[in-house]
Length: 610
Ligand code: F6R
Image (cartoon, rainbow, N blue to C red; front, side):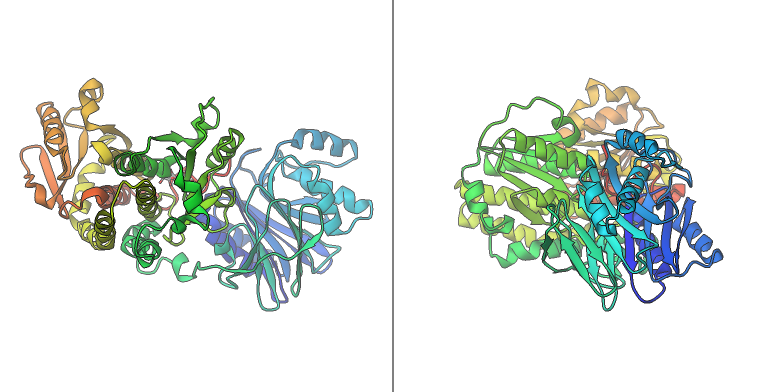
């Protein structure tokens, strides 16, 4: 959702801010703005719509300065208007950008209005600008005013502030929303996401909860929640500029689908290097935390939730542990009968999804302290709030529709299953070696599935004019049917539903006619014959079937039934391989329909609000 970038330098930072905002576009936004301190003035440009429009406006207004802040906004409080876009300015002196939500903004607004401040927007953010200005007017430094103001805010924020009276100073604060400081050569930065500053530096300090920071072009000082100076670790981010560029691809989603053999290989590296399913893969004290676990509770949203649904089959079948999977936004508001020795696993590509974070906190409030995060973004909120962590190594995922994050999450969850199984004596060395071998072959099988793209693109032409589609799967491929339906609906806007194939005659069969394409995931596993019967049910009602069948299943096409042969059945890891064709199908249908594949309407990459 919203994004922040700021810079203190000796060069003109406007092009850098615009470039940073472009790199934040993938998160989803509806307006953007920048403010700079130029000479003795604060100057600002804001636009609804794309950053490219903001760029043109900044050029037209001749905006140049060595200090500035920028923002992409996803509207929450107040509509999508220029006056609601950030930065917000207080009394022509101080400009501020904000990610998050200020819960007590109404009380603060009344108080500040009584003090004479005039409001120009309907946002919760503007109160923060005036509050900081109010404390400055009482004699505080810019940093001191920020530190006083944030103590009066309830809610979540990442803030960056500049003031015309402090031409070289940028101050920042973090609570509940990510914010980092980038360390350059003779210039320093702030950003909500490392991708915004990676063109200048990969050396970053992740601010901790309650931290504030003062950033100038040659110095950075961080303060903890008690306002004491503190030294925070400097990390070198592994996000590369190349990973943020499209290269030869048309869309990031296409690039990310094709990156999966590499992403899986990188994620597997630690597991294979460890020579087995060592609990230490999940953190130093994982052996102790996982040893006496009696059940597993998985919490996640969207595609990450579907990864959890696949994992349930593995965890129950291989580790022999009861496993529940909940949508985070449901779990966090329901009375839960918690069992003490339960492992709570959160899955999140971004590590920022508010519902997942809050569900994790709720689990903590129930006394569930064995927590593990599976996440793709280092130092994000969810892993920071968890005892154990596994970082998938998918690399930056820019397309809103999750692809490589999903398959790498599945690898992490499979490794977790095997670790739990080993700790419980459910697998021996030979079985462990066999699973490791399956993992080693996974990138190759995924590459085979990617090679199906031309055939899938032909199917996509047939899908493109449709209004509805059904996806069917059974067992651990049922979540892949759900994922296929989600991918299709979010980027092509075709209404799609995923069903366990056995449920067909309990309702959805009524929808089937010759206008309804039905996609079937038909791996060569113990349920294949059942799936074939389900296919006959659809065929008898005139439905058009599109079947992804393993090469060794001898599943042939017939009237109304088209078949694409996926690689030979890969056993337990089959859901990972079968995820690829449904991703490709969604991508090519979206392409044929001409939608904005990487930025589908109404969606954001990281969902930091409820
Ligand atoms: C769908 C998709 C979303 C996310 C969901 C959770 O393609 O990307 O459904 O999976 O918003 O996001 P994370 O994994 O960042 O918590």
